[in-house]
Image 1 (cartoon, rainbow, N blue to C red):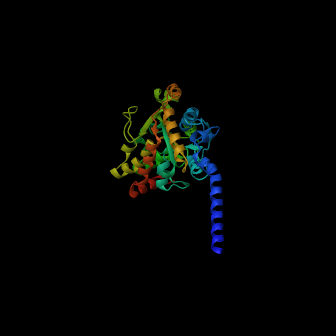
Image 2 (cartoon, one colour):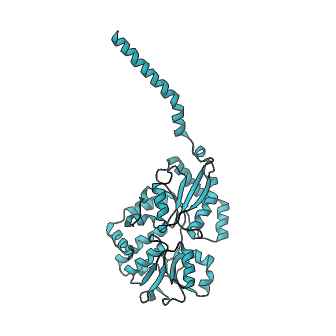
Image 3 (cartoon, rainbow, N blue to C red):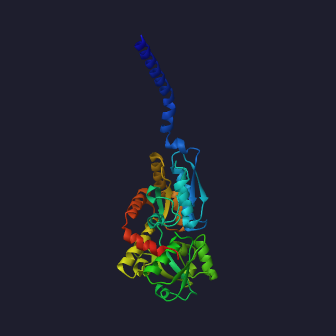
Length: 350
């Protein structure tokens, strides 16, 4: 009898467990089976921009914020949150460490995001390969321009005369390029940091506070074309691996390197130009939502209304899918250590 009672007791407990699981199953399944559209309906996506309003990064962020939501299932609201600071490290660290990982927090950060981690830049608190890249909003040709009143007129002159370059943070190319050329091209740039964006640096250049700034060539031609036409600025170099069709007679920054090893170190940093204007997501975004975000991004690049804005604004537009940036992050992470170390040492602030 004792064995039978124990058997009945076990059977009762087992039956109770089955009943509880059966009752709970719809709730558990519902949590996991929530569709992408159900999640995003009535929800808000925040895009954290690591630069101050008014610059090129901010322009692209706001452009996509206006159009990407209608291509995401559930049509969430998409809003911009400005989070400038530390050459966008503030925003990047926030996305990696504190932001929701559910697909409601995206960011627009520096194109050097991947190499900063490789360099061990002070303040980096993220792993670039663990971000979920949504897409490249555009590649952008950048150029270092110098004010007509400066002593130097060409990059060769900068090897003779101290030239003040304005920068907007230690991880920004506005500071990285002149530091690399000081180490590997024999130039005499003096970097003055602290500006919030390239717009502020250009104003400082007009006021005579700085001599030169690295800025999007399209921005120059769109907003300051008279500077080029009236020779108020000279072009020192273009930040690209190869000369572009827009600046066929301007040397690339890589060409300025003194030796093959020097040029390899410069090329590593300049490869960030392939990243250019990225839209990134936090680690941990559920796979279905990540796919929806990437698909929506590419759909937005073909959206007639977005394209109309591009044409009206006359900005660069060369988008790429998030998968491309994800693969690039993996390649940068595998760069030989000796190349990374040489470039990293050159970028250190003195």
